[in-house]
Length: 456
Ligand code: UD1
Ligand code: CA
Image 1 (cartoon, rainbow, N blue to C red):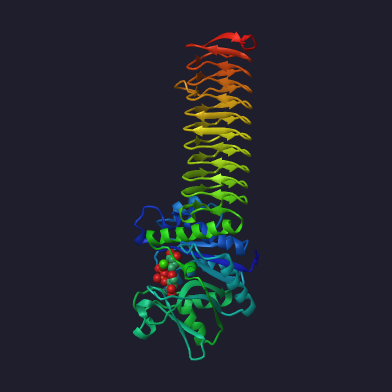
Image 2: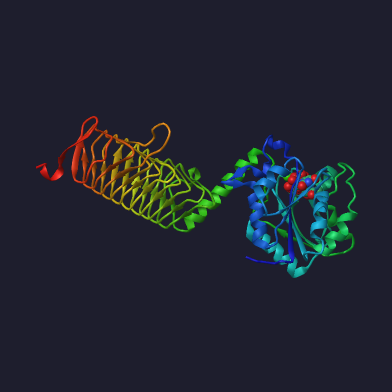
């Protein structure tokens, strides 16, 4: 990471985004698990410690500010008079603060850190008036055309609305990302004139001004046109999501993770995965999820904010804010909810649900069970259909099951209740009182009938 306090970043996000047709500000729409705007903020933060200036429209200001907190300085552009006008809104806050000013868009999430670093290095090395990114694309729709003179120097950017057919045919396009020499920028920005066709202050006119004064203009071509994708519609949002997904999955494949069908696996950028783990189709890994080494995850699993140790298996299950320790497994069709923990080697089979509960080391809960607010000791066996009745209609109550206990099929554990270590309950029992260690209880309501050592 380069930290250069002499760089200031301005992020433009005041556009109307009408094509999104949304009540939510476009830049707050989620992409790969985080708001669109987060991508530009992260790029800015990677380049400089100084918080960026974010230019927003008046109708999105409140919502964006609430999400943003102190991470950027908001500037409101009340009447949208173009990209040049948008940057003018930042002049008072930035003038005299930095040697270079980087202009980014809030809706260009695929831009890579390395590309911006290269742009910044070029700007610092050459100290050109403008160092800008260009892209060559077959479909120039809406982009400004890069006009070069006979010697190949950039002489102007011409917007589509103003382009002659000859200029419109140019395929080198303006990405909209520039590093300006700050002195140049703040001196020339106030000289911009409204464009003849649209009456907007075009930031791009600064290029013509610099060329007219024979000031150096540098450019950097990106080799990946997708990087410059601006998100104007939900079609582009989906395309960006697909591209991000591919990047993330390829990253993990190169780190030693196998994907049987990466096209169907959706990982947030915040997820981490250990080596030799296999991800099977239709797997969603979200939020702050970490998966250990040599696991098998999927198919058909959704895992959010979970910590999964090494050598675990998750088959067709849904996990939220849960922990799986080394060698534990779940599924098919298990559901771990908030606060669920499968300890080392624990097994949870078909149609189980756990919430705020711990299944101890080596414990087993094979079929059709619910554990809520329960702690199950090591090597206990939870029989098919066991339910902790933890909710009395008003409050939740705890259940404790001791080490090595054997809970018979279809036992109802009416909480609060404690089953001692090594105790057994008979099939179909409704347990309303504590069962001492090493004893056997059965019936409805269950009574302690015998000590286990008297059994045989
Ligand atoms: C601009 C460039 C064009 C370039 C294209 C790349 C100008 C004049 N043209 O096109 O050369 O090829 O980007 O996408 O700069 N915004 C504001 N306030 C405004 C207008 C825009 O904040 O008044 C913001 C938008 O929210 C967006 C960005 O600026 O993030 C670009 O706006 P957009 O309208 O998409 O770009 P164009 O002006 O069409
Ligand atoms: Ca745009």
